[in-house]
Image 1 (cartoon, chains in turn yellow, orange):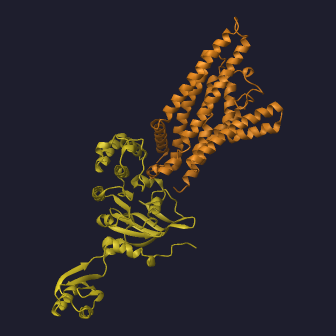
Image 2 (tube, one colour):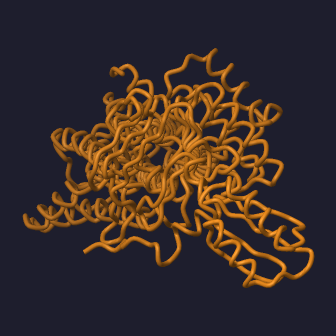
Amino acid sequence: MTQTSDLVIRTEDLTKYYGRSVGCEKICLRVRRGHIFGFLGPNGAGKSTFIKMMVGLHQPTSGTGELLGRRLGDFRSRRRVGFLPENFRYQEWLTPRELLRFHGGVLAMEAPAIAAATTRALAGVGLADHADVKLRDFSKGMQQRFGLACALLGEPELLFLDEPTSALDPLGRAEVRRLLLDVRERGTTVFLNSHLLGEVEQVCDEVAVIDHGQLVASGTLSELLAGPCEVAISFAEPVDPALAERIVAGVGARVLESRPTMVAAGLPAEDAIPELVAQLVAAGARVCSVERRHRTLESLFLEVTAEDAKPEARRG
Amino acid sequence: MGSGGATRRVLLVAGLTLREAMRRKVVLAALLMSAGFLGIYGFAIHVGASAIWSAAPGGLAEMTGRLVAAQLVYIGLFPASFLVALTAVFASAGTVSSELDSGVIYAVLARPIRRGELVLGKFLGLATMLAAYAAAFDGGVIALARWQVRAPILSSWAAGLALLVLESVPLLALSVLGSTRLPTLANGVMCTAAYGIAFIGGLIEAVGAVLGNATMGNIGIVASLLMPLDALHRKALSLLLPQGLLFQNGGPPGMGGSSVPSVWMVVYAALYIVALVALAARTFARRDL
């Protein structure tokens, strides 16, 4: 069990109802310091509801939580938190420098510290040359980058990002990924709401999946993606499917798919692969490729959010 | 985080709100239009003053001249008050609600700032802007009248001007409260109607005084308690101009000439402002955003 001090977020049965509909239901989550935590789920699954409860915009209906060791909703813990909202709109009649001066002031930073932090934050997102341009003249992508800079002001210990790359092109996304890894390097924990699975897979240490307001999977990426060992073996010339299936069964494996030119098998352990291939070759099959099948975040996501896997989400 | 931090955050928000009013050209539009108003008013009373003093070789009887001059102040202050009140509504009806609509407010509220501090800061920033505007506008009317028609202004003019500056603040407080709950447009409609209630209250009270009808007088008082704007206006006029020179019971009512509210109405208005801003902070603090 993880030490409490290592946890930046801890929730117990955190629940939010809007009238009769479910925002989040009985969410028990642990986020460890220094990690990039991916929070996944289909649109409307409750990701934003959860983040809004974390940063104090919504009151939970029931359940408890701690943020950076303080009770959820305690506004003092927000001094050490950065937040990029989903719709990332900022006072468009201000320049980034002016708006960061305001945010720095609210964070009780002194003027010289704000000036230095502003330069650093804007440089970090590639907006160093735009410090004095009105935000209304920013493109959507630039506004989102500015949002990241604003969230990073004051070196927060915990950064909440709600869909931080939705307005960015692939290049911008890659830059943000790099930025997140940098931020983690400096010890900041990142809580990343996203439905861009590839992105999450590339940067996150741990993930949780929410669907219909309920947590349906959580763990480290390697835990979640570790599945049964599966191989697809292709043949240069057709092989009698019945023969191939008999051999697969012979090494204690399960047939997943069987065609004259290919057999896919689920094996009890990966050391059964050489034996299976050897037997197929001995039986005369001309094996031309052995492909290890990996479980991806996408397949996991589809699996846990599939219709028949849905938990009962309606109340009463 | 002590109260020093809270004060600092309130002032930061107030400063940002003032800056927004300037950047969005609210201040510029208000100043240009009131300068236009004062120009027309000044020119008109200049012409009127020439007519008054040259009507007869010896001028009008001293009393009549003073009476007309006082009415000219009176007539100038009514639209000035109306314009300041409408500006209060326009500038503030969406101060919270429009930021919720656009989403601008989320990044701010995720900071270590209490929602009440945000509401109070917004109110103070808007009140500062409005007070400066009312002082310039109403002060301009008084100065022009004093200069052009030698209008008799009482020595308590500073207190009178202070009340003129204060009179739109209850409406501002109502509008800030409304913007924490209502959509911008609905709030604007509500606050404009509240101005109407204050206006009709003064009118009913005046007619009641003429008819000697106590019930009408009470209805007027209730309206003044709901929105003390017109009552403050009448109190201000009583401090600015000699009583004998004002329209009494039968002059154009609703423009403040009928009855003079007591000093308790001023105390009530101050409490009204504090209560509404406190309520705004409280309702906003409990809302899911």
